[in-house]
Length: 185
Image (tube, rainbow, N blue to C red; front, side, top):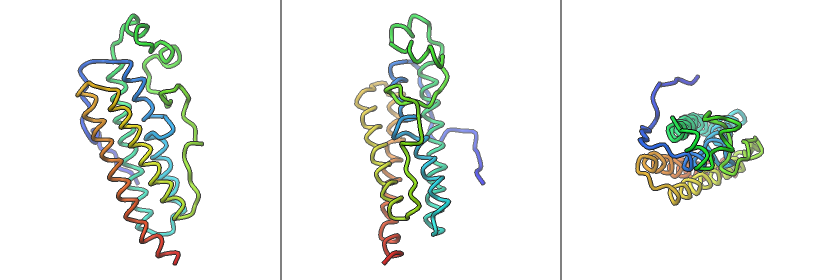
């Protein structure tokens, strides 16, 4: 069972809306290496995981990824709140606005909507853990790319936090490799 605490895992307090940044950061909401795919990947993999400690790890990280999804949604919302039509047109946010207004939609920065093809669940311990390691690194690279493009400290701060959590998740999955390999020796 999941318990929901009505606060973000890390504070998001963006003072200056910026639809250009929102268009970039939305990729971590619904892009191929974003938080939605990560949470669904881990929460789906746990069902076929035969080892309780690894099932627990997948559940823990999968639910944390849902918290990251919530943070990305808050960032995108705060970057697009109270925009004038002129700001929307000038920023190039108009194509997103036509379909979604300023609603948070599961899409990549490229405009491609999220689909399940970007996640993998094999039902094999070693294959799934390696998939998870790769997924965490791809998410980290996406956060690195966002940090290269964004200079607002109010936006960079929670993005840096999320990037660091990807590294921690990678390390936690990596710690399971010797154990999962022994299980098949």
